[in-house]
Length: 420
Picture 1 (cartoon, rainbow, N blue to C red):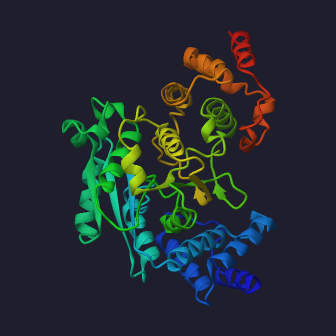
Picture 2 (picture 1 turned 30 degrees about the vertical axis):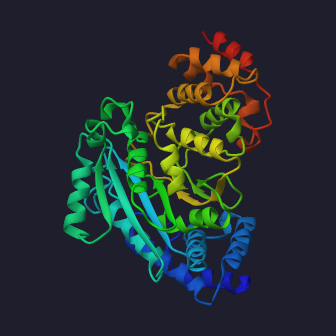
């Protein structure tokens, strides 16, 4: 069967372009069509998983990106089709300065038309599923360019009947909602405050089999993969399922050169938040939780900026051990108009992680030296350290950092002092 599926994949994209562009709705639709073709012979989830493994072992240079994405989408839909129990998936994402990416590509070089694309992707995934439904919650994070109003305009003009609502974080702050505490204004939030507010709002809606997921505003993650997260929540009886770009069958197209600093970030946070040591990719913007879990963890968060993912995962893990599934996904970098690329807020994120360590975990003799190092570190010192990442960290697999401590906090401190 998998040989037949491989041939179908090759024949299905024989005349397609080599470089898949997620911003092109025609290419997006073509990949969804190919995923449907993979499902037509009665293919089940296990067969697609075997095909995916074979493709990964063959190497990415042997298969078009569109082919590998199509397999992910087919697996996702097969997972939903195999379970006819009630399901509702709420998708949340935040917007800040998305006034260019919200436009179609023919109206701006950075245009992704992401509202339309996300709706189309969810419509494809849930088409024909009688017991499943979806909704979307878009949250304006205090955007000075009024991204939320632009999203409302797109919905009003093009998708008046779509199950999509636009929220504004400033409303939650003005109303004094617990989920928005301790934010004094939207300036105190960088994505985290809005995403958590959207998740909390979605969790107030009562649906059987309710799953709440969040993603990024851009098109890095095709929402047709949502079934992969749902599959782990339902079949794996997990509280959370998170997209991972660091698994053997993950499909990653990434621009830029941030890997070494990213490894240092992972090394340091794993030195502090040991209950999450079995997770490597905490920052992938594609995570799902049961609605009950969201209601339990959304309030009382101390982090409303870019490290909010780690706090959500830590609270989930403390709720039940080993309750988070890592899901290999397809992720295509979208940096052209990113609002976070230039920020690289690693140090501020690490300082937030230290605060989480001190709030949720007992003091540890192994973690304390790293906590003290990070608490005292300046941005200049971080930049020096990040520019001279020890080889033992830079060349290691981050997945090994849970039991791999070749560099001590004292050695890192000495490196910083030598750089003065």
